[in-house]
Image 1 (cartoon, rainbow, N blue to C red):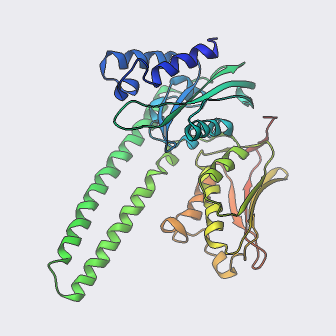
Image 2 (image 1 turned 90 degrees about the horizontal axis):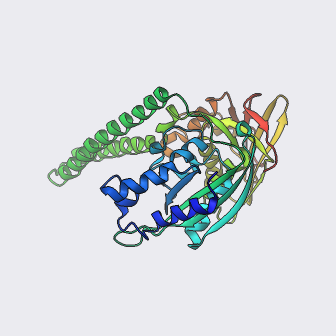
Image 3 (image 1 turned 30 degrees about the vertical axis):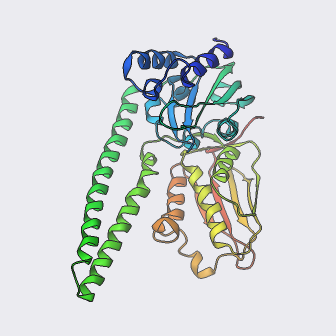
Length: 375
């Protein structure tokens, strides 16, 4: 096992630019220096991930990919860190956020029952990375020594290659469609200046609005393209909800959780389910002061409830809550939440009452949840 200190020292030297003066040499393939440093990083036995100030992944080494039960670290680049790190304890994300926010080093010992790997202790450190380049480029890195335990075996290479290629093709096609829509909307706007007929102008405005809706829907698919290619995995429920809470402004509303150490087997996108429920309550439940997310056994299943003390949802509206076309994101939010949950057989329903607050219940079937150990 390589001592933690030596791994961190190497990472610091590489990422702070003490010996590498260009950003593309730190992360790219260009130049001899870039190749040497990349080879060193990828040979490190411990996991290493680097994120930018928007919590997007800049780099992950193969040990980090294996640690997250994935095979291809290149597929992490540009993705949201909280989705990539979803299988790990939330303390990892918290340490990275603290390093970004304070500009200081954050050391921690994280006890984690990794189940398949057994109980492990992560001797971890997160530190700011002042990337060289034009202007300040804030970033942070996290690495750890795992005691004891080893990274899980890789998945089949052919399966991973197929998923990677599918994601690439989706991105290319989406990019081309968006380019053509931008051209179409631009010419519609240009045409409005040459037409005096009010009826034709009205038609052009409606056509432009339809094009913008299509544009928004295509952009919306970017966040969820991994739905078809990302495998479900075991994740701590409290970490999932904590990650969702980090993404919202509670506006003075208390968000309380009572989830224990329960773990669920679900798509990494399950974070968006809780993000949707919290946002919907904050946006639509006027006068609420508290949102509570809790888990209780309904043997052999598990019920995860998200409830608030707002005015509740009218009976007539409750019937269409989960229909496509209802709610935010052009009508995809609660419908998409149900689709994400259905991947592993979970369901969602609204069980509140008018005047008594909204209550969304997620039923997780037996085999898709388990009582986690101490963390």
